[in-house]
Length: 542
Ligand code: FDA
Image (cartoon, rainbow, N blue to C red; front, side, top):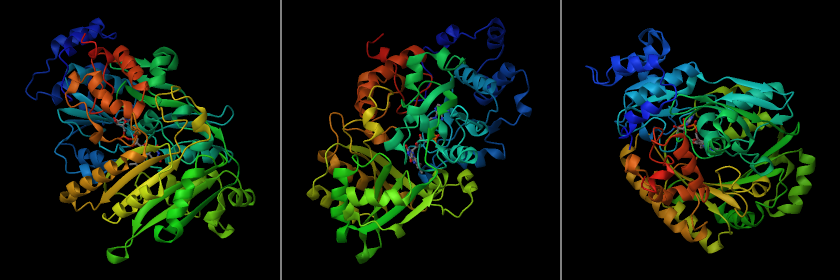
């Protein structure tokens, strides 16, 4: 899966930067020395960068005191903490030349790269690999430059959503950005896969608002939108991270938000009127006024004989209570929303509210990289195009009662999402989708041995849901990565056809176009992981 490609050495010959100086260096430094991997890599980096990387702070070997703390610093799923798959080195570059050197030297030495921005990958693919690998951790690429005059910002991949929201909120109370809800999520992985949150119905995805980017490809070439070409620029906005190169930074277009927005959460037990409200919600969630985002968080609460399923109607309205109340009376009176349930705030405070912080807490909580809730988990996703019948919902409630800690988060689409073509960027789940489902089962960090039981439950629920969700293909969201859908388990020989089994779930008809772009920009599949885009030319057997 992460092994060196057969044609890797010949590929090196094609590298554009393969100037005479480097060529001389390659002949001097062998990758088969006493420390067969890390030492040649370090030497290569030293030569590339013209300074002694041994003395630098960017290379962390397993002997460095910093290695373990950096390794676990942004891992968001403790499920992988005890994995035996550990990087040979962790690199924490400060500038583009250092990333470029790391790419070129890893190729030279036949080592795989895992790029990590925020570390939230559901399957740990930014820090796990089955064959020798290094991590390029983007922690030092976290600058954010907000320009209110032209309503844009440059944000580096290692920044978090919380840092972006904070930076925007500090400069303007009438601007925002439509991205995910959890502030610790990294920009690099999130924008690469699409990215949606409370502004999704009004403005679409984060990737819909990317207008430029800086990327380093497998040849070490540093490119922006103009130099990378529109096909690659299309692919990195939703085609998933880690397939095309390392994205260093993104230029985004900000959106306008009202000075006052309103948040509310109404919780109902399914055994009371919660079940019928969830059913009703399915018929209207994508048709509400686009200023209203109302998601449903289903979870089991209580324990033993007291166990119940609860539905939280968790909402953001882009306006004040005065206009929200009549809107709710008209579009969802059954919920019985009252003024006392509502909290007015600024948009940036709503980012805090949805992250689980209180409005009164300082805005700086958005800068914390420590997740509020961290436990072992398995996630999956689906898209719903027709309301699930009541009998179908009933089966979900029954299955919830069989597990300890499970969630289904139903995120409404419609609005702007229905207006954007499914081919505009690689993320294809647009018109016709009422809502997205994210399934999560969690278990205690100390219960590693219980993983199989919870995975089995998740598999059972996913099978049960099949008749009720999108089909041909059954859709899935790349940012809720799910290796149970299938993997590139034959490494570089994975054919486009084999990968289609999971690739079409994430990207539908855009999968082929992504594979074609991949063939052009990384034909030897240097940037790869278990669910990266394979080059299309493998299909034709060339
Ligand atoms: P991470 O660093 O793990 O990277 C994810 C993938 O992208 C990996 O394959 C990695 O190699 C690659 N990658 C990372 N940086 C790269 C770079 N600079 N260049 C190229 N490839 C790169 N999603 C959503 O849409 N809305 C939401 O509200 C949430 N909320 C949420 C909460 C929590 C707690 C979690 C764990 C996840 C979410 N997500 C989400 C999902 C999230 O968008 C998804 O996991 C992103 O890929 C995470 O990006 P990170 O940079 O944090 O992950």
